[in-house]
Structure formats: C-alpha cells, structure tokens
Image (cartoon, rainbow, N blue to C red; front, side):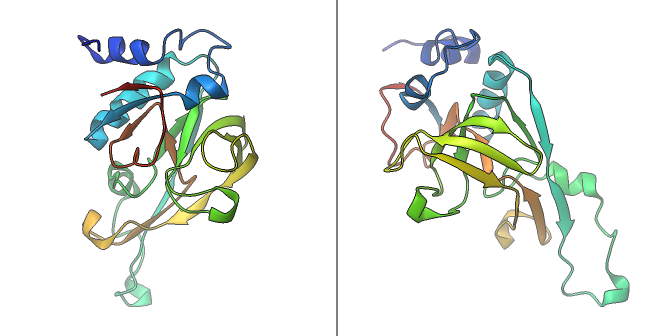
Length: 194
C-alpha cells in the first residue's frame, strides 16, 4: 500500500506511463481504477487523466432543454438560460461538456442494450469518435472485447436533482479513469487507488 501526496501522484501510481502512446491497452485499462466517494473528486481525477492521456481531444457538448409541460404553449421557451442548465451536472446525467480521446476508458451511465452487455456501469475503451456515434470496445462483462456503437440520446435527471425539469441530449457516458465507489460495485480490478 502506498500513500500519495496529491492527485497527480495518485493518477500515475494507478496508471503508470499513462502519458506514453501505446500504454493504454484493453488489459491495462481493464485492470485499473481510482475510486472515490464524491462525484466532484471523480470529475477532477478524470479531467486530470484526460489532460495527461495522449492524443487529440474531442469535445461533445450536451443540448439542454427545459421541460415546461406545466405552462401554456404561448408561455413556453427561453425562461431558463441555457448556461444555467449547462452549469448543472446532476449525477444521473452525463457531463454537459464531455471530453474524450481515442483509446481512453469510458463508462455507460444508462442501460442501452443489456442483452449485448451495454448496461449502466459497463466500462469500455474508445475506438473511434464520430459526431453522432462513438465506437467502443467492451472492457468488462460477458461480451468482453465486443465492438459497439454508442449514440447520443436524450436523458432526464430525477426531479429531486435539479430545481426545474430538464433534459440533456448527450452520449450516455463519462470518463472512467476514476469512478464513484457506488459505480464500482461488481467491477473486478487488480490495481485500485482510493
């Protein structure tokens, strides 16, 4: 057991040579994870990791929309600024700004097709980054190494997570260098940072 002084040291203890091209193979990513109890710490660690991960960054912005079912049609629209919705990052939604690189680990945030191994919490590795779809390889589960396509979908948080009803059209993914302890349940990894 090793104690780390800061997040960068923790990142490189769990993911040695992360910044070297060709290091992040499927086995390398499958065998490692950093766990945290807090979503904001997971977000910070994933942001740090993607910054050090080699390759060109691709940014995907979520399309947020307020759901105003309770208003008359003539009163709907533009009541809530888009910037205010993007500032909200409820835990059940993917980030408003998703930054990915080819070869990085990702995790599904929704059940897309459980029969094919595409379940909430499944870890994958990015193979190709398209505008409307992401091609990835499954790192875990009974369909390990299968190639799959992840589309953008419209998602809604639970009512208690936001001050108003909203939806976000985004890929149902987050980076998976780090994950919450809750999301790690059922995962098998050899090298863990906490």
